[in-house]
Length: 117
Image (tube, rainbow, N blue to C red; front, side):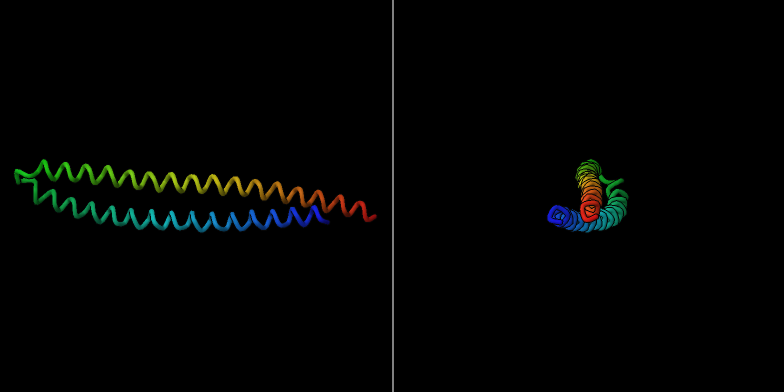
């Protein structure tokens, strides 16, 4: 019974970890959605600026700022995508560990049941 209890505790810790990872994945997705909405709004603003600077000698300044902004925004989105992927991989690993522990618990329970007979 002691081995089963240890496995049960391990399973509970893994389930808590999976829960935490689910919350973190949800947070990253929410942040990404908010940032993408902000990015779209900023894109509209940049389009308005483009029309303002289009006939102006300062067009090259606008283009430089826009390019820098787009580059940095893409870096942020890519970073969020990478964070989300890492969390999803960690969650899959935890799920595999949970399955393994569950199978071990089942095996221990069957062994204990056969000893009681």
